[in-house]
Length: 142
Image (cartoon, rainbow, N blue to C red):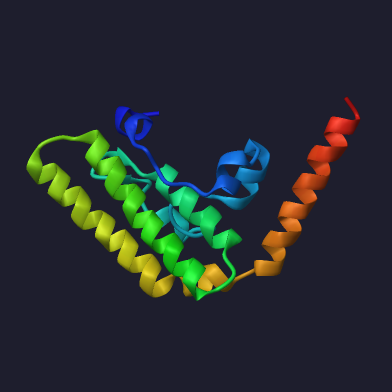
């Protein structure tokens, strides 16, 4: 993990913090959507990795139930990116450029993230249930 990310105090819901790596890997996918379109969204803002903020945002989208939850996830996303930027430090111009790009990321999810938020709510719930069942089965077989 880079210096900035390791020293940034990011907000994450308790469910994300407590989730196993397997469960997280089934829910989060970094910055951008699944598929080729997601490959167009950089995981770094002017050299600073923001994947952690994107993963927390993905988790909050998957756990959310209503528009208030979506808005909270979007605000946490911006806040976490700004925390990463502040923790990384750097010269004023670089910090300004990173903040400007973080705001673009936020505006994109706030304006166009509705489909991602609402899409596959049942599929996500089924995936979480299946992973938990697999984890319980693995624990019982030990």
